[in-house]
Length: 177
Image (cartoon, rainbow, N blue to C red; front, side, top):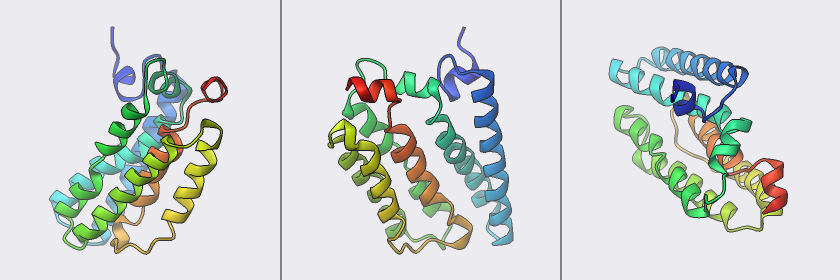
C-alpha cells in the first residue's frame, strides 16, 4: 500500500526522514507566509507562496534523504530523467504570476540558472558533479536578481533542492557510476 510518505518523499522513507522533511516544509512555509504578509501581498499570492515554500523547503530536505537518493538514482534513471525533474520546477514563473513585484525576466533568470546548472552538472564526470554543483550554486547566487525581499529565499532554496540535493547520488551510486 502506497503511503503519503511514499508519494511526497520516497518509497520506504523512514519516520525520521518524514519528520525532518515535513517539519522543514511546514516551518519554511510559515516563514515565507510571514514575509509575504509583512510585504502586504495579496491573499492569492500568500496562498501560492505557502504552497511553493512548502514544496521547495521540504523538497530540499526530501532530495537529500537516503530514501530519495535510492529512488531517484535507482538503476535505469538517466540524465534525461534528472533534467526533466529540474525542468518541471516552474515555481519562479508561478511566483511572478501572483507577485507583481517579481518581474518575469527575473523568474526566467532563476529558472535558466537552475536548468543550465543541471545541464552542466549531469554533463560532468560523476566524480566532479558534486563540486561542480556547489560551484554553480555559489556563482549563481552572486548573480544580481531583481527579486522582492519577500521572495529572496526562493532562488537559493530552489538551487539547493535541485542542484545540491536532487542531482547528487549517494556515495554508493557515485562510486559505482
